[in-house]
Length: 76
Image (tube, one colour):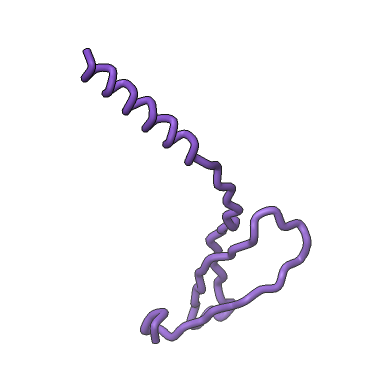
């Protein structure tokens, strides 16, 4: 009987502690769109693809950064 009571108290205390530590984290994740642009050159067509990321909750114009890398990858 004492073992059951102790186990019940232990579990109740553990649940209360876990509940007290839980909090809601609000994340404002960016809106991500995948875009691609084709060149107008009919001789050597080229398509450039990338991601367009806009901060969440933004209705006005925002500054932009364009990151371009060599054909060897992002680290080159």
